[in-house]
Amino acid sequence: MASTLPALIRVAGCYRMQSSTRSGSGARAGRSGLPVCDRKRELPCARRSSGCLKRAALGLALTIAWATAVCPRALAETRYIDGVSDQNMAYWGAFFSGGLGMIAPVSFESGWGNLPARVTYARYVAQWNDTGPFQRWLEHVPADVTVDLALTNYHAPESYVKGSADYPSTPQAYYRALQAYLDLAIELDHPIGVVEPWNEPNNQGGYRRASEADHPSLFADEAQRLCLARGCTVVVGDTEDTYGEVGEYLRQYKSGLDFTPRAWGVHPYRAVDDYGDAPSGMSEFEEQCGDCRPWFTEVGAFFCERARQRGVYRGAIWQREHVADLVDRVMPTYRPEHVIYYELKVPGAEAAESPTTCAVGDVTDTALYGANGEPRLAASVIFEL
Image 1 (cartoon, rainbow, N blue to C red):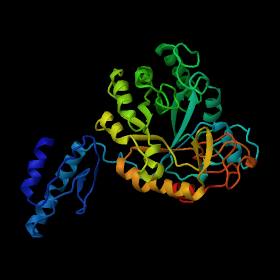
Image 2 (image 1 turned 90 degrees about the vertical axis):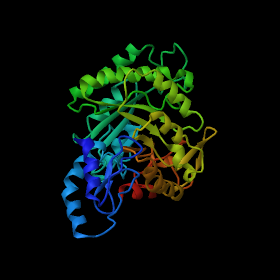
Image 3 (image 1 turned 90 degrees about the horizontal axis):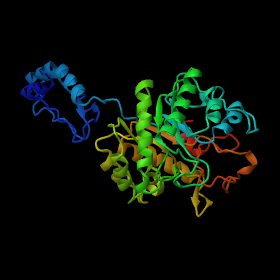
Image 4 (image 1 turned 120 degrees about the vertical axis):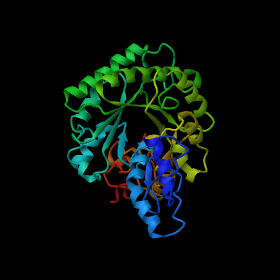
């Protein structure tokens, strides 16, 4: 039936629908108020005759039905940041409770109200074989927030060394580790909704060479096996948008997958940096993920930026401008399904930060809140404070 609808609508003579050149794109309202597919526009009535309008009204229901059929992800695109991420969750508790000590257990309960209701994803990047910190965090996550778990390795070495005990030795070892996380979340009555099998494999995750991409793709296969039974969504890829590298990396990564992913994750830091003038590999990512609508599983704008293992101060105004660029340019350009900002708060004590220097030991500071718990200017862009 759906295939006959375009012809019926064209008979009406008032407008027609054209599908996007990108399959899976969502429908939106056009100038006439009728739904149209992404990156196309409806053809307006050539004449505003009553007959034309009657035929348009008669075809409206058919148009909506057809748009639903060919654009099933009509509401998939997010127009705002709908998640927060951190790798330092153990530091959040005192911030949310209003205290100054940064060793307290994590607690979203007293601070989640500071974030808008539209922030519905909480992401935790965990050591793959240590559930302890994750458990302390999860015990305080509100029940109506979707938990996004990404596994990685924080231990030395910083890059993968074959046979190192710091990385899963086999896909089965990874399977058991992820299973432990999923079981723990069920025991705590807060099942994990999203799994990112391995965080940023081409950078922080340690499998940096394209020749090593088969390791995280095998982990993705194991995550898919588990999530098919548990009902969680697997977000594959999760790569940084490294220009000239991410395309080949994902090509190798895809060749190792034994399933067709529903969701592809990317960390578009380079697309945000320097207002897009710095090289970004987002076009390479798009080419490899096909007609996907990406998840920005991690993205941020720098308050302090890494440069030769030290922090280079950028400052609050610079950070605010780049967060605004993320919202106003990068997100509309790539139309992500979800955007998760990293990170919420600077770890460490208040004395570790001054107005013109970087926090001690944190040379890649993208936080929206300073060590003293006060919102930075960038927070107002995202959270409308």
